[in-house]
Length: 517
Length: 107
Image (cartoon, rainbow over all chains, first blue to last red; front, side):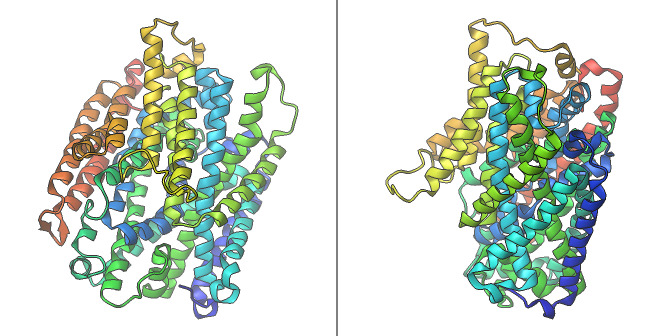
């Protein structure tokens, strides 16, 4: 699916205009990024609307805008259980972690999630493992964004016909260069402000696409009738449990509804809030904007199968083409331009956050965890410059991951989301609310989540040993098994400590005060 | 329980997993919040757990407005009602939290 660029001047103009704006924000932010604090947490000076929209746009990415409708095309309405939990995740995030993390950032020098792990547990091992998890997850998640960015560029600029098999690599490289330019220049100052622009664009475009999708498909009734009557899709497509096992569908709820508490690109934004009292309205801004963006997944996810069933669109060779095929083929050109800009925004806003996180883990968290002198040992290098170099390293690793991965964007996104979820959720969500969790339980839980998620994913994808299969029920998501395993280990080790009457963990007074607040 | 259900993979395990996975977010809210948050957690557990049970029970069942009833349950129990309840409860309990910090009742 590709459209020659000159046939769609408004679409190309909107895409180029949007890219020019984010590059301008990067240049503007260069002068305002004077310290590592500015680079990593935007000087801790954002209001609740900017923070909420930046969190939404970091969370909702190419995975939701491109991968989501693609996954719906493949497995039906059950795929929506990935995003339906946004009904409760925003408030849950604030209840379980929002206040604790923001207050911690007020009493300690905390820029990253591994920083919070170090403050809570005082363990170099737990901090180092958390940093490794962030690097692995960031590379995978960024890989999914780059894959989405490459596919979006291919669709907008029509490179598939011109460049053939090199098209995806070339389109991905150009997208990566633009994200790198503003991320390295402006760090999180650029990231937060571009996230705001991107968040507004995404909300407006999602609402417009939902209306456009209903109109293009002939209205709600005709859309559902066409899908139900077609041989290709059938009534099971519309039943959340019609085409995929219950273990998969509720695995989505478990991984995406609970695992949101381990997503560093979302948690990181909580540090940037100017005043902790503004947290009161964060669920409204975050949950409300996520709910509007969910409409794009729902609208395109239903309209494209309906159009295929009605014979007005050719069946998709690659399900990830669902959004660009619909937008470029069925929306008015000016609206298509806006949506393509929003699509690029969705992808790039997540990409810049992940670049920043991966860079922070490489340049700051891992070296700190490895330093024998701990907190007292002075930093002997320029953290700001190291952060900028680390950004480049993470980006290149993610580009290699994207080009080697041969599957749907949503599946790479699910693996990466699962890595963050399984490794970090129990240690943060339980550990920051229960003082009895010892450092050894956190380390064991992080290591279990990381190794299980990575190991099960590799096992599921390996073809060298056909007899070697996943050791659990068909339909169970590897990420769900890893997350459940990680929680089990955390509770088991903590329980063992309590039963053996081992001394309760000693918390620093400021950290204890934050946990009691 | 969740891990056991995933590893066993029998019909009843799918039910057990669905209910446990759906209710688990409410458990975390109860662990983290104060008295008001625990009240919300109970409401949320009923919504999510009840929604999961209804979805499983209605799978392959009748249609409402062109969609299977289980799809409407998915939208209502996992998205619409939880959004209204939790956003309202968080904002409402935040004031109480400021007045009585040790209660920890919201954010």
